[in-house]
Image (cartoon, rainbow, N blue to C red; front, side):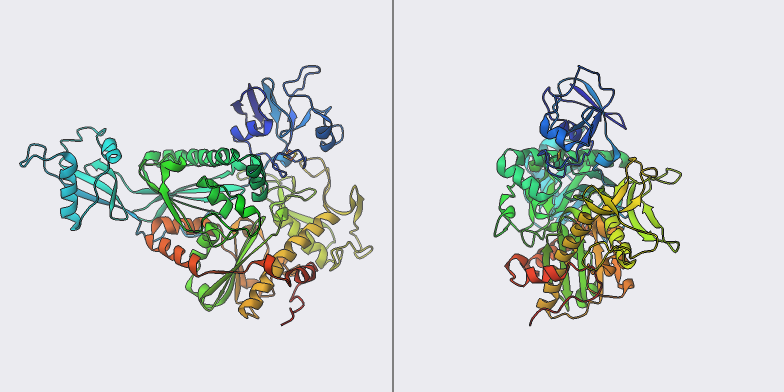
Length: 625
Ligand code: FES
């Protein structure tokens, strides 16, 4: 059956009976699926284009689905993609609020070039001809030449490498050969003559999005960057939902691993094409991600990460043959996955730490990476301590009444102007002219709205709307209690009011309390009373306004200019480990030396958490000694 998704006219052929949600991901359409496709959240709404009365290309909607759709939605042709099954060719429209695609990070990287000293290198040698005496087989002639040139013993050239080489024209009569060496000891590729360049790929596998960098390993330069949504989102937007799916149906581990690798292969193919090389010319790869993403990438069941004592199956960095995970680069190339520190502190956090300068390690500084989980690393006079805080999905724009991803159309900033009107800053579509129309609130927009309303006295420190506190702005009664209108229906792209509800404020309070309580325990444990600076990593950190997070007490007080966004630090760190072998060793040492505080084991956490829900700047109540 042919399924077509508009706008964009993306089509896919699927077997009859396939779920629409799976069809969407196969077509490269990233649909929201907050509950992981379990028919609980109502976020995966699509609309059947030109529905024909009496003829349905989809299975009939049943009661549970109709109850989750907006009122009258079933009659208008709205369907939940996770509950509708494809029975015939169909064309569907994806409303903007159902799109899960995250806009590319504004700063996909901050460090553009890194001094190269890659684990792969080239060695070009002259070899004896096939008729030269004494007559020796090709492999022996190459090995002897390599040994002479490198001045040390070389490993054997394995049959697959010779097999690939033997397909080059005039391979047996070439008088010089370029060997690509892995860690100076293993030949992974042979090319006649001078050989092509050394190319590598670094990937950052986020729960929501993927970033891939194609790099020239000889000069330490980025050749191209691609971003895409993580297709595993068809099984839930957070790692817990995905683990639950795997727990219920272990075969889904392979399915999820294949999904992410297929998407990476597509990105790599595109990058290679744009750079004028073949994907098979890529000789090294590095991947980072949170522990669940790293487990799934390597085909290791992440299930122990989801239950106490939350331990990973493995922590060490892993170097595997790229072909073992299905990565379609040079057949004998390695994929190196950075080490993990604990069940919640993964290679992505470690990669972000790798990018920090000397001053960071020497001072009293925080690195904060916030997503559905918040990872915080404190540097204190050269010692590193980390915590992981369950901030929840609020910062991804999920579980918020008008929540959307940080994509074009999302409100990312809210303020109240001098005339007492609510103003909004909206993420604009690149190269599109005119005033963008808002679709909803992304994570930074929710934080910004709460901060602006708190500053104006419309929200109290307890997070409740304060009646009559502002001359012009008053909360209105909504379907679920009080709410503040941020953009009226006539101005929004969805023709619905965009509001901040009392429940949204509560979600922000809970998320920020988890983070702040974790930070407070980290500081107390390390004996740090005052921070020098705070570095915000990740996409969410890129969009945050330092004044907003200080105003609601999400981070401890520090001068506003000492809070800075550091872009996609995980991607930068992955490239450092790709370009330079020294950084791989450093990552392994950091993982060994970093201390982790397990918040679930701390009895004081709960009291502290409750205290941190207050929307006030400044210090929280000191913990008892
Ligand atoms: S209802 Fe949650 S993904 Fe469809």
